[in-house]
Length: 514
Image (cartoon, rainbow, N blue to C red; front, side):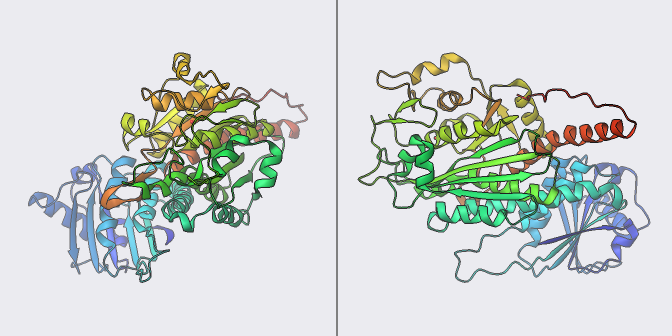
């Protein structure tokens, strides 16, 4: 799907030829009364007759409406015009058009009063989400008819930043959804590494892939232990986005890449085990974030680490009671082989130390306990640093990709004690999401760290089964927020240099998720 930003007045929108015209109508617009254009007059008449109201997601559809050049017209209520309500309205309208022979849609924000960056972005991302369709393994998959969405606004220059951000996010989220949705035999560690190499062809992005020999040389005994039960060889993926000065400390994103999780010897029940193809959605979110970074080109350095393997139960598989040695040197007693995500993540977290990062964020479909705690609304967030936690929480709010901070009290680590190793990989059932985070925290002493448990938000079950692309939007907003100070510092130093002043160097501040 292609996107276009176009400056159009309300009257000009009515004369725009397209397959469908979607007009967002706010309560404020209705309160101002009918304008001179046909859409405004139609909306006022529909409200007066009780056939339409501006509640979020309320729709009124017309066909070959008098005075409207578009074949189809859809009025969509957005309530107070907030980004959340705009997303709801656009999603409802676009989903209603998906099954028709619609190739070009004009989405008009002209009736909204100077929409903010966040509103414009929400509209574009909602269009991208509604337009995504999985087709890879379908023999007779219908090609999506929708080819182009034109975003109509009254001030194109004002809307440009939100439009650009929305397009970048839409591409990143679509990539994350695509790889999350692919069956495990179409998303092996090798194929996942291939996706990373494709990203390495984009501006400012580089990709390196390590195989079993290189991983063994690094001493990643915990990661290798999970992979040893599968015939599919592991891959350790290292992505780099270089958007700032080489000396600038990067943010490191670590994505859990279990491309299929049977549970290993501690095998899962058969019911819904097919959904364990989604156990690499943390990795998919890292891929999607790098796709968005390549589009948006922020002034920041970012490293992406993806430990990718399968968790299978063959004769070589690890067994409950086995003890392995992690890259950090800490020994781990594996009491449950289905708590494998933390075993691959801990070695990746240790590997992250070499980059001297300003912050490290791991993203993982880690625990069913987090699903029980937060459902599919918010991702669980844990952090050893208050500033980092606040930045992630704020990014979740601004991107509509919500998270919720959970505690890391030291008392929760008691259940991880064992007589046979430095730490066990599981504690009891109580507080399972927290004890998993406490396990990971043992490997993060050398940098500010946060853990996002996306087990409840990375995919949907039932009739709407499929990957959501979360938390790409949250991660991108966080990274863009970190990039701004770097750009300002550069400009400030350049200004001082131009006046002959000597810039004062200050130490970089450190903003502080199985």
